[in-house]
Length: 396
Image 1 (cartoon, one colour):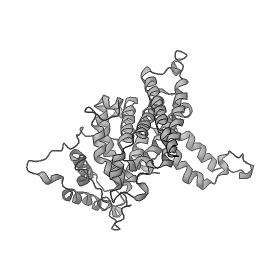
Image 2 (cartoon, rainbow, N blue to C red):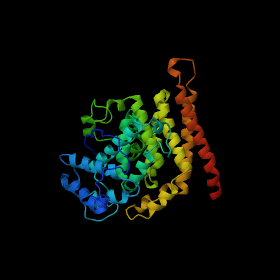
Image 3 (cartoon, rainbow, N blue to C red):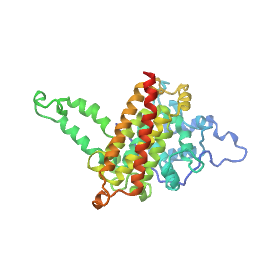
Image 4 (cartoon, rainbow, N blue to C red):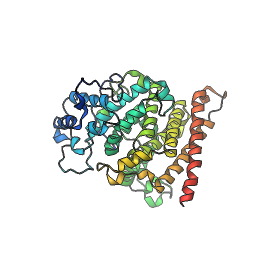
């Protein structure tokens, strides 16, 4: 799975939801008719009939930032390009049409630049992902939720940027290498052990299995442009530090908690990938990996314990939501699968924490804050499983 993007824009000042500068007497400046032409113009500036990026992103960045400065949950449906015709040049009118990869990746980058700065300037939000007067990030995500629900490609672009910020490719490379080696197995399949991956066809290993074991990636051309420039070019260097990656983990936790239900299948799969990549293998013995795994696990547990049912119902009524994506995570099958995975991830985190023996050696010392966070994540996951299992048993 890959997305196409241009270099990420430079960061701008922290913005507030619905706090855009509005001239006195211009009450209609946020009406949909004023924004639809702006979104359509951005597509006319694109190359290759809309499928390629524009020569300059100046107008795109100006439009998106202007929208982010004005958007709120109340006016989101008027400001956001919810109709696919505002994000593509296709005239088919198919609600399943999605944004071109360059559009989704650039839009996602602008979102993340803003969200990271919010976390960077509000340590309370980094420590606790919840709705409160001191945490404005949930309101930001509520405002863009309608677009996330209608654009799976935008969600993919967000996860691809998170994968780069959190260096997930480095964590998941051993698993990817094993699958790639198995796809090049030269021996007869019948002579291999029954448990060998080499018995599976190479097309199946590389075409279907590998993409579920590794996080979304940015294309090679984009990665080459960022060589030596940190995870997100244009951001200050602090986001390529351990503290910066903790900010990114906090933004991801907020996204997992407050994203619309239509996006949950994609986000939950990515969350499992993050937890397994962080805790499996020798990387699980690093303090930073334990922190990342615990931060994502507790967000998944909170989401499963208290899913946003009301938002799910409202998104179902929209004509722009593909039927195949409506409330898929609410089905019994998905809920049982999520509970099984949640319990397994809690076991993995508990196993990793137990391997850090205090005072035995400096490498096996676990910071008290990280250990407390990991224990809280394990307890929250166990509590969520215990609370939801009786519900599943009653349904059966």
